[in-house]
Length: 132
Image (cartoon, helix red, strand yellow):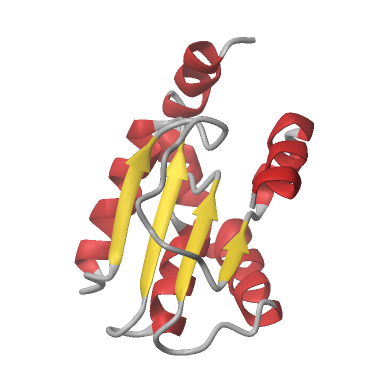
């Protein structure tokens, strides 16, 4: 499946992804961010971000002096994430609709890489471990 088709599959489920956040994505994302030992002021790259469960958790952990870049192929999922961030008053996130394999970050370096459920994509995992 090419990237466009994959993005369309995930975009078609954006309401379902958001509805599952309190019971599935949210708890798992908070656990991930806790395990990463993120500190205030850090820069975090969150890939395969979806509706932003781990993005929001990371943004809360880094606080207003930190920053999170959220990258996903599915722009509609990211739009839900951006809306959720706005509702929570989180202004330290930038959402990027892109393939992480070809995304060109302008950030100098990241303190941590978060990839929650995206690890199920073997292609993504191999690229991340090699590139970041």
